[in-house]
Length: 154
Ligand code: FES
Image (cartoon, rainbow, N blue to C red; front, side, top):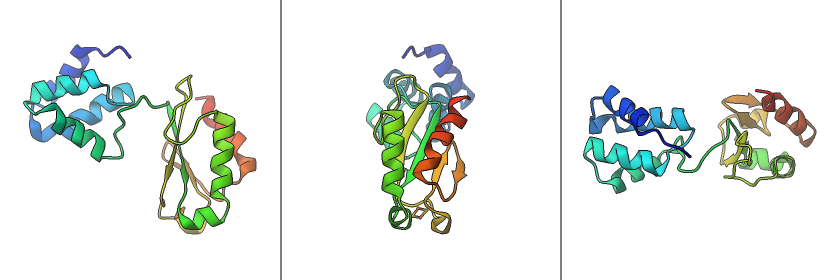
């Protein structure tokens, strides 16, 4: 991954090199690269005057941030109890089979990242799959191909 330091510096300047804006700076970097590259984290730490370990600590604390490259589309399969008993594991297996990656991994073409989550808080409509923030209710293994096709075109 080629990190353009000028671009990272622009995000840092936008927030006046302020430590208190660290999360906002990291959000901008993640929006640009879809993850937080090491080189960018080092530059942010230097510029706002924080030890790298503190910046990495924030980057790993929040689930919204990722230190690994992510795909253009993030597929999150709920593995909470209610979704589990309605077939969640089979749906996850089908995404794994069709995408060729496991949870926490990204397809080689960087189109999809597959993730799981403990519970999305909408158990009544389970099993639930969320893609890029869109909720897919009462999902089944038969719907997996259509979901991948729908987002794969974008
Ligand atoms: S268990 Fe899946 S939404 Fe709660």
